[in-house]
Amino acid sequence: MANRIKEWRLRRGLSMQALAERAGTSRQQVHKLERGERRLTEEWMRRVADILDCAPADLLAPSKNAPVDPGLSEPGLRTADVHAMNVEPVSFDKDNPIPVYASAQGGPDGTLMAYEPIEFVDRPEPLFGVRNAFAMYVVNDSMEPKYSQGALLLVHPGRPVRQNDFVLIIKQAEDGEHSALVKQLVRMESERLVVRQFNPPREFALDRRGVASVSLVIGSYEAR
Image 1 (cartoon, rainbow, N blue to C red):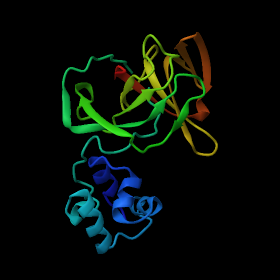
Image 2: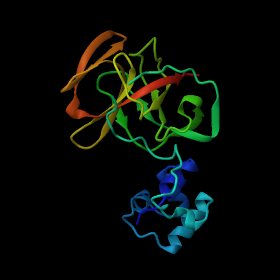
Image 3: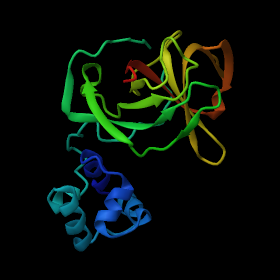
Image 4: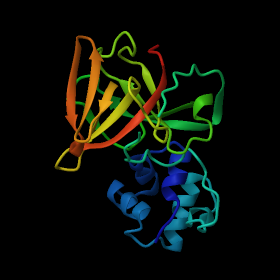
């Protein structure tokens, strides 16, 4: 049965493991509950709602016409295609933070990505109202001086991208795992993406068949 456990869990800044421990169950059981693979009984509703500080009825799936609360869902895996805006954040929405996911590798191989937030940060003005917006840390120096190691990338998954934009590329392996890397887009061809890194300077191509999504990086919080 469809439900909103995941939305409320992310709203409270809890991982699946944290929710499982508080509920006295396993992470696998929480995963099944969120996916509707295990029946959400009244007992489970009361137990989970108490942990998430909401009413049991809040965990039920909304009607199709109900408005969607932006910023609670995970980033969608879709390929984008217009305009990079390197916008300097000027104000923040502290009541609707964005999730931070596993780090983005600067090199060609990428680093494994898991859609389980490691933390939440204040939502910058360019991402106000943007559904599925998220952030990722850079873990090496291959994109310096544009993005230094430790910089927190701000990602707009719905805005199209174009030549010379800085993008977060999600690659999908045969085993279903996803890896992420940040690059400058040189061009999109029918069968490959040509991208650029700065340190050391080089261009290389990625097979588009292995690319799950290309999302616009609108800016960053620098390492502290």
